[in-house]
Length: 92
Image (cartoon, rainbow, N blue to C red):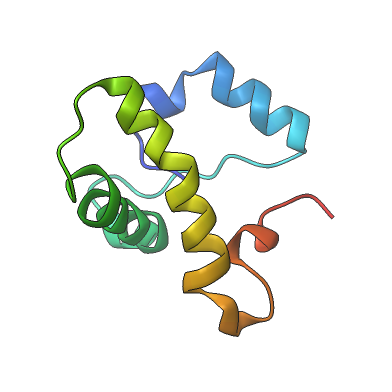
């Protein structure tokens, strides 16, 4: 589920990934960001806890910090839901 931004609606790369996963692309109604609340909340958390929490000296340093943060988010922050949130989206 994404908003209606041009980069989501017309991305050949996104369509290829969705096709490989067998997933359906669902668009929210225009001007209704609350319909995509879970993704919007994750974006906010990414901003405050990863992107803007520290000063990065390069884009490479920032990119290198993302994988460990996601690992922490998926395994340490949400252990009470019988598996990490990532396990909810991985193919079965």
